[in-house]
Image (tube, rainbow, N blue to C red):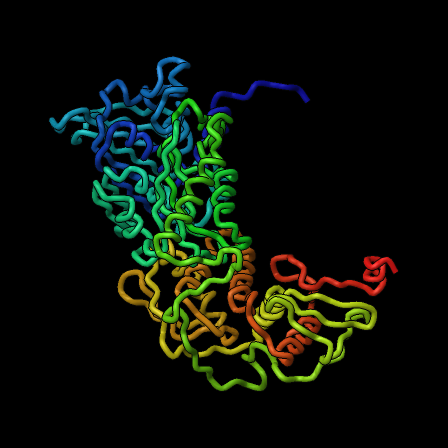
Length: 561
């Protein structure tokens, strides 16, 4: 096989694929151009998830006639002139090929004007080919229209998600910029339906309320931290609002949302909460000489200079906030216990419907032990079972002891009941009204049949609110946050089988006995009986062990016998 140089058109398509992954990445590049042009108003419209059409309009500085075709050429920019400018640059990163990449995989139209005379120019491009310029009326600013994305790359187009998923990605991109650029108004329309309008000059608190709701805003504490070379501002979860899954976690640095494991670990370290997850929206202003955005084609990652000590400063910002706020409210929140009160009014009473046979019972309490079909080393008797620290169940066996994690064990039992549809629905005494964000409402609408399949019954109100009337009978307590976590569990995964399994795992986790729940002797016996009757008793649905066995031989060795 001979080595040969790729043709320019193939190189162009490959490079475009590194920068433009989906409609959202296309919108990201265009919005950043609008921001760098000094726009005070930005409007985005999409059709069919942005696959069919994307329109980004701004009132920025605009482009002259000759600048339009130049802007679409590779490695052209208004941001830098010499290599030293990369270290000083405070705009949104530099790639120099965004418009070039977009036009390589779409039909692109740019209409722009540099003043309010109404005189503008339109440039048209088709899959990398310049089609020409002509006069076109336009106010000051630029409108970019992207049509038929990846039409010339069917393999790439095949890997796009459905229109609703792609629309949600676009929505999230705009929300990110809205958090940072609060002096700018943002409007978003999806298939001619307005999803949001955020007026200019809102505070971060106002934007969080407008996008994620007042209830979510009330679950947060404000952060402000300033040291040499860095300023951190935003909001983090109050300790009693930590969740079972990672949702609403936003890290923005110099106007760009990034993924950074070190920063995320620093936030979690400040809470020291194990498997509980905080929400946070943190905006960081960093001296540009201490970071590099250009290590990633889509600028999703950032590299920090070691001299900035980013982990230390983020940890200090969050931990100092938690300490200050806890002191302000005059109460000690027992973080070391990991058990939190959610308020008396947050839990709902339920009225169970008549059950067929034994369906719907969370545990068959009060029954005598059923002989396990497993090996003798796991056999136990009801008389030799006890609970430790309201978290672990100890049981004496023929040749040692077993220790059972009560939460993980119950998760396994409920997970299999859910898979086998071994439960009924129950009516809530007081229906729950959940006000969803636009993003959550979109996910719920797409997967509402999944909720129905597992015993949820609900009504939709005008706007984005949902009334939950019935829930699976395995639940003793239902909260608004739980419903939201279920919805977000569907967004976290891409493939339908994974979404289904993630949904089941979240259901089982939320319904299961928790650490700190006191159990009677009959309840412990029932838990062990059902665990060993399950298909996979040794691991919870997330893969954590449920049982730890210690033989007499091991114990004797420990005591030097």
